[in-house]
Image (cartoon, rainbow, N blue to C red; front, side):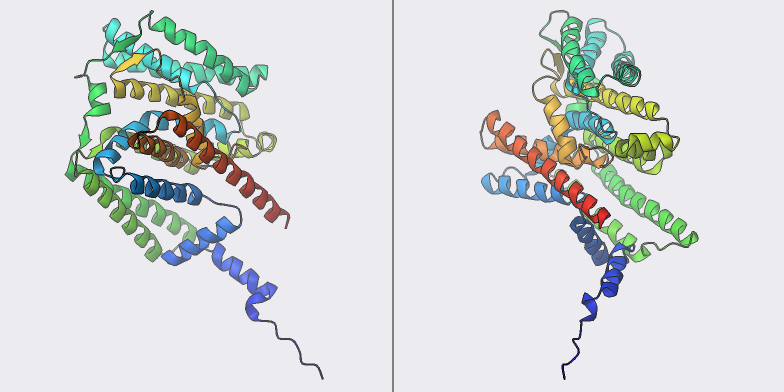
Length: 421
C-alpha cells in the first residue's frame, strides 16, 4: 500500500500566504524590518538598496586605491562640492516624478548665477535683491514651460532643449561680454559656500533633533494606525531605528570635526531635501504628483488638476536649478560663461536616476537627489585623487547610470509580473 505523501507545512500555499502576510506586516523588530526590505526587493521594489550598495562599493574601491579618499578633509570637500548639482538634481526629481524631463536646468542655473553676480557686483544692489531676482527668474522659466506644455502640447523634451540653447545666449548677454564676474571673498554667499561650518555642539544637537524627529513622526503615524484599527510597527522597532540613526549621525559629526566640521551649505541642502520629501509624501498635492506620474488620464478622471501639477513640477525644477546656480557661483566665488555648462545637465539628471527616480514617472523620493549626487561626486573625487582625467569620470558615470536604468526597468517588469500573478 502506497504511503501518503507528506507535504511540509512551509511549502503549502496557505503557509506561503501566511509568510507573505508576515513579511508585509509592519515590522516589530529590526530584523523584521530587514526581512521586509529584502522581501520588497525580491518583489521588484528595490528602494534605496542598489544605490546604497553602490556607494559602499565605490567608497571601498577608492579607499583601497587611495587612503586619502575617506579622510575627513576629503569628505568635507565632498560635502561642499555635491550641493550645487545636488540642488539641481532635486529639481529634476520633480519633473521625472510626473513623467517629464527638463534638459535646460544647467543653462537656467548659469543664467541665474550670471544675473545674481551682475545685480550684486556690477549694479551694486543688495544681496537680497540679487538673490530674489535669480530665484524669480527660475520661477518664471518654470511657469513658462508649464504654459507651453499644457496649452500648446509641445513635449517637455523639445521645450527644455530650446531653453537650453536660448538660455546659453541669455547668460552671455547678461554677463555683458565679460568672461567672469568675481564675487567678493568676504561676502556672505562666498563665506556660506566655503567657510561657514556648524559649531560642534550645535552639530550634535542637530543630530539629536534629526533622530528625535524621526521617532516623533514615526510614533505619531503608528498611533494613528492603532486608532484606526490597523497594525503598526512596534515602539521598540521605532526607538531602535532612531537610536541607530543617532549613532550614525553622531559618528559623522565627530569624524568631520577632525578637520573643519559640518558645512552649513550641506546642512541647508539636507534641509531642503527633507522639506521636499515631506511635501511629496505627506501632503495631498504630493500624492497628486505621484498619481499624475503613474497615469495622467486616471489622475484627471479622479479630479486632480493635472495641468497645475505639471506647471508646479516645472516651476520647482527651474527654481531649484536657479538656487543651484547661485550656490555654484558662490562656491567658485565667481559667475562666468561656463557656469552651468559642460556636464551639469547630465550629472543632475544622472544623479536623480541613479538615486532611484524612475524615468517612467510615479516612483522615487526626494532622497534620490541626495543619494545620487553622493555617487556622482564620489566618482569625481575618487578619480581626481587618482590623478585620472575627466574621460574616466564620464565613462564610469555612464556605466553607473546604465546600471541604474537597467535595474529600474527590471524592477518595473517584476512588479508588473507580480501584479498579473
